[in-house]
Image (cartoon, rainbow over all chains, first blue to last red; front, side):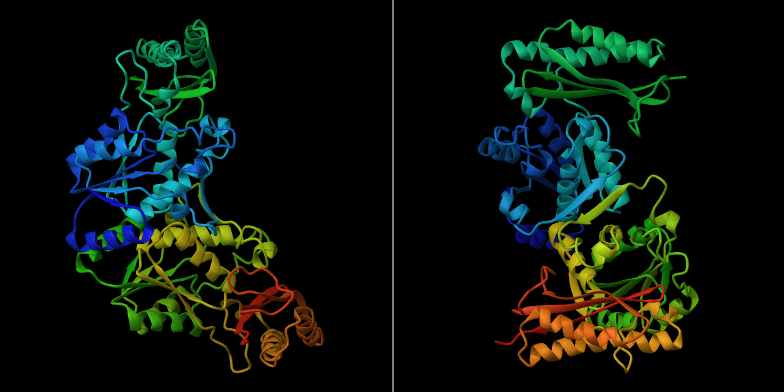
Length: 283
Length: 283
């Protein structure tokens, strides 16, 4: 596995791939790799000749009061995991390389960034859109792999790729979960044992919502109320939002129609966790 | 010369170039081609195997009170000029193709877009940065050619290419002028004969500023005053700004140092004209 830390080095590597007509798969990460990331890498490994992983804790997507400084950094073990998973190239830039002093460009996906995570974290998606645009322009992968876990991020990325005419296919991979349903996240490391148990309530509530829809429920208010009730019974959990939305636009629905996403965000102590489930209302 | 009008068509064309390892030169235009554009195309023709020209009057870079609707559109003669100049591919999308209904992404180059044209036209450079990012992601040229005439635009484009890690070299080509010094511009068509004569005062004033610097003047206030005085003597000309700036940052100087750009913008009737000259203070 090759490790490149500079923009110039990566550009030189990328130009060489052109003449070889290889298919490049890309998995962007912030490190602290877990089974969720590894499932993305395995997908890329299956479909592409060249698998590129980036590890970069992107400061632009953290708000001033967020967990940038304590976000888990485990580069040594991440490298070992990448090597074992058959990654060809690890791109691991420093902040100074990725955002030099005179850096001043930002990318915004306007509508899709407004609600939900965008409301809770006002500068988050601008940071995401900017870092992903930079990475895609640099690596120019044929396919890039994102987890469904960060569903709104996935839509923001798909939109910017379409809007900026970036010739990369965005592949959505299923959320990987613990046996009790908790979605894997690098932030799960922050949870104490009792918080860990509380946290699984989020996926349980979302599953209950999906079940209700599958059983024919269409009234969003009622579905939301029942999910909310379930979560409110767990002490220590603060609900940020629980929403039933159009799966393409993320606009909230009043009545379940077509492809729907159930989005949830909770706080447990100082820790924010998000999760989502997709469901198609069969007519 | 091939003409492509769709994003998909262009992406297909672009993928085919990869395997052939050819050098692609790109000249983005809003049509109404004149000798300035043709000089860019000739440069591209000289250096590259494949020359791509785009014609697209980008609505995003016009303000609500500006001349979008009456901007000259001369596509038939533009096509003939491109063919004659040896252009290989003309990309000529419609608004609906380039900005489909759900389009919602924008690119901003923050500091460099603030002053001068950015102040006079608050949404202009966001429109420029967005269209140029789209075109560069789509065409992925090795080199793209821009005129020095729109100097601030040139810096905005260079910055976004660097910041977003777009692997294209931005080539600056000299401003082409009429025999009396007037910089060529598609907007010169709007000028009456008497306005045409008044308009040449802008380049004359800038030349006078350069001459003063070459003769040893360093006091920016004095240089600006003398340029201003010269332009004020021409009836019908309203000065918007006349500035002596750092050629990299566009920050105004008080004393001439290093590489300097003299920027000017005037209004003649409803017509805005800009021009600039570069000068290096020899120590």
